[in-house]
Amino acid sequence: MIALYKPAGTLLLALALTGCSLAPTYERPAAPVASNWSSSSAKPGTATSDLDWQTFIVDSELRSLVSIALDNNRSLRQTLLDIEQARAQYRIQRADRVPGLSATANGNRQRLPGDLSSSGSSAVSSTYQVGLSLPEYELDLFGRVKSLTHAALEQYLATEEAGRGARIALVAEVSQAYLTYDGAQRRLQLTEQTLASREDSLGLISQRRIAGAATALDYQEALGLVEQSRAELESNSRQKQQAFNALVLLLGTQEAVKQNARAPQDKPMLLQDIAAGTPSELIERRPDILAAEHRLKARNADIGAARAAFFPRISLTGSFGTSSAEMSGLFDGGSRSWSFVPTLSLPIFDAGRNSANLDLAEVRKDSAVAAYEGTIQTAFREVADALAATDTLRREEAARRALANTTSETLKLAKARYEGGVDSHLRYLDAQRSSFINEAAYIEISTQRQIALVDLYRALGSWGTQP
Image (tube, rainbow, N blue to C red; front, side, top):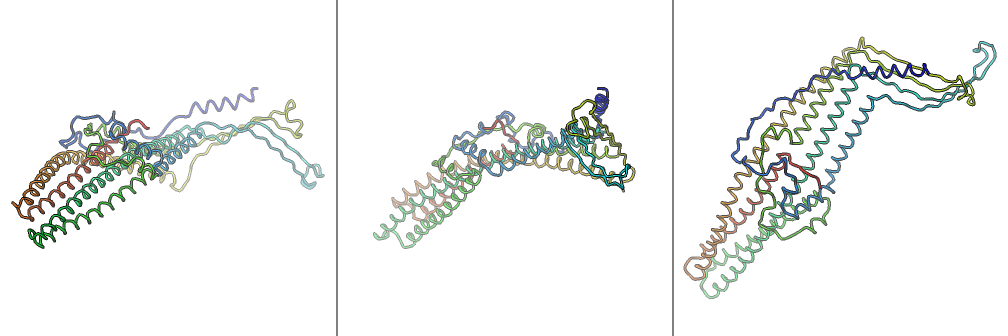
């Protein structure tokens, strides 16, 4: 039994000595952005840290479509598979920190010619062995394997954050595609109503022309407005179909869009007030920033592995079992066998390979720092742009709504005055043009404001609970 405990005791002692790391102490780089938002729209609202996408999206049909997309979108599925791949890679690397144990069984028979035998005659020898073996295991005295494992872990965590970012992006893309589709439907509906109204007006002009109360010029101008509406109708029909196709691509199924199709509605589909928080909260929450920091930590760990390569490397192999010249004697008394083979490797000359690897690791860390800082600056700008957009578009939407209401009333008055013979046909035509243009502009701005809210939600890195 003493022979068994000697290699085992040595192995336990070696494991106790592992754990030293030569990686630099990680310090998060200072954020290269201001401590507060400069936009005047950073007002109190629902905190994004407490905001899940189901709460952000108040429209039930849109929530249903987002749930379908999260289950069916092919790009998201590929991203999630990449996460599984990174997790498996980390587990593979982590396994190197623990000694392996294998069951082995082998046999060998060979014939030795007489001129090579000490007895001068040929002989056949046999060897059979059964037992447990310890594959080559590196004692991680200087933290090389530990650093590589840490780097693999950080890469996996970065991939996981990328997956969270992909979910947020998909929620945003589906929301924006649906808002675009709804806006196209509203414009198409407005154009159809305008075309019907202009065709009625054209009929009235035709009757007045026959009666001698309208000129050929009046008729041609009215006909021009009808043809303009028909062209707008085709344009809006094309935009609606393209928006539908984009939504189908994101959802991965056409039937889901058809089942959830409904008449366009002029009402908010999203939560209207979102609190931006502070830039420091953004750094702690946004997936791409967190992923960049995990990659930076991985590059920091790589330096530890590169430094450890300058120091001796000790590897252990061994086996314990039973051996015999006859298979029937494998488990007889006295057949026990074991071996314990430590190996020391000390780099003496490598033509500068280790130094170059260390330089490479340090340069990659510096590059990761720059990428991390650049990601923060990009995120800061996206949030600031989204805040400015939601702030100005809110006021513009209110102004556009008031303008559309005004021109709609103007159109009613102009029509009554024209039919009463008070005003000319030209003024009535101008009122028709202005009313259509301002109604279409209002629909466009209201759609843009809803899309800007989605941009803000995505820029803030909100996600919340999964469906």
